[in-house]
Image (cartoon, rainbow, N blue to C red; front, top):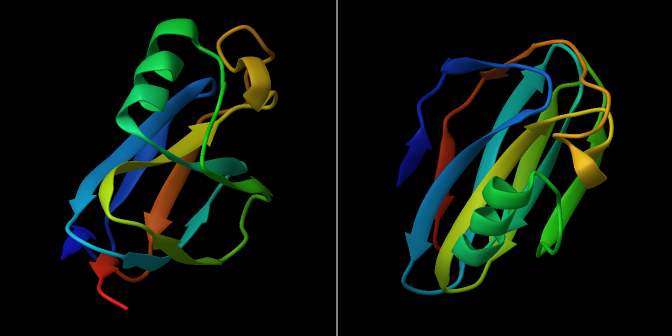
Amino acid sequence: MVLLPELSYYTLPGGQFNAVTFTTQGPAVVNGTFTNTEGITLYQMTPAQVLSLSKTGSIGSYEWSSGRISNLTITYLNLAVPEGAWSIIFLNADNPGVYLHGAYTNTTIVTFYTPLVLTSP
């Protein structure tokens, strides 16, 4: 299943996030290749974790994190996910622990060189 098409892109202001949400019927893999212009962090979260992030503006719990991805780095995402409802969060913040209250970074542009896809292993 294609989650985001090839050559899609979006702008992500400092201190903001974008969620790519999907549901799997069994174990699956999310993969795709992208870059960004200012540096971002990715998280895998459940719907409850995304709701908490939206309400509090803070990263509380999460299932997986990429760590900070430097700007202009070509990144290949290959993430195994179990059955269930998930979101991949693309967060643009200098201080991910308290992103709405921390110092904001510049707007970043995230560009997908390949589609972001969900496949069965």
